[in-house]
Amino acid sequence: MRALIHDGKQLLLRNTLPTPELKEGEAIIRPLRLGVSATDVQIARGLCAFSGTLGREFVGVVEAVHGAANEFADCRVVGSPIAYCGTCDRCQSGLRTHCHHRTVMGLHDRDGCFADRFTLPVANLVRVPETVDDDRAVFTLTVASALQAIRQLTIEGKPYITVLGDGPLGLITAQVMAKLNASVRLIGRYSEKMAMCEKWGIKHRHVDDIGRRADQDIVVDCTGSPGGFGLGVQLVRPRGTLVIKTLLAEWNTLNAGVDLTNVVLNEIVVIGSHIGSLREAILVLEREDVDVLSLIGRRMTLSDGPAIVSAAQQPGMLKVLVEL
Ligand SMILES: [Zn+2]
Image 1 (tube, rainbow, N blue to C red):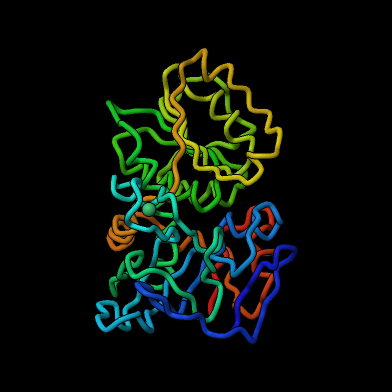
Image 2: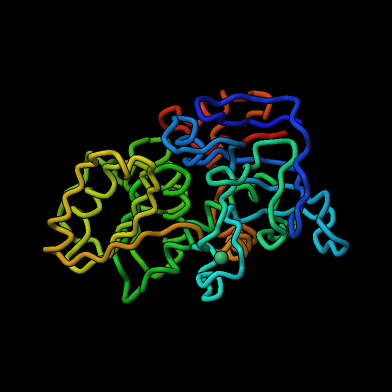
């Protein structure tokens, strides 16, 4: 079978790999549609120490499950990329996504989904209803990430919310925030993406055209770049909340120019926010509460190999979808 792998140095498409072995509690999945994520791009750039098959965003069909019972037989599914042990103290206290022994597909000790077949624990799978087609379902993880930001916030009154970043996560986060009793605006760089905000009735400004008045109750950083944190600190009001969705390998090694002085002086609440509930995300997609189809930037196939990730790195590119 084929798989797009990172060998520790570079990305390459391998064509003659064996089908993965089915382990206890796991399912073999045949992907129907894949999405290229910011994490994939960082691995391709050599910023994460990961060797193996790339990819974490998929919708696919369950082909086989270890053991007799198979509630997912031939079902279309999406899945959480984080596999947990279920027995450690964190798992026992409900923090499964923070399991001490977790593996993460396409990132940490577990092959990803950019292959003809891959495996994932059955416990990670969520069934996709017929009403949600493949193009929508492949956005489930991004929608779940946006919903997690809301789950972590306390919304009181009618807050002013600024979403930073006009990539797929920022554009979806702005849409789900706009469903709240809130005044939402998106700060971005690309006029064609701003035009989408108008279609959705969401206010928008170019990043070069905004004041720095520190008057936002909540700022959500979806920029995917080191500058988002500093800009968020400038925009959020004293005792306001800054939600960080930007996950960067560079945070470790880069002098990101982050000045925490105003975080202390303005008593800003900083929240780190990662993956949320895929079940809730599927419901949002089923209700068509968010427009994800407008976020498809380009369609490619797995045979395109490393060019898939190169395409996702082009400035202003929206979501690159991969067909098998
Ligand atoms: Zn655990």
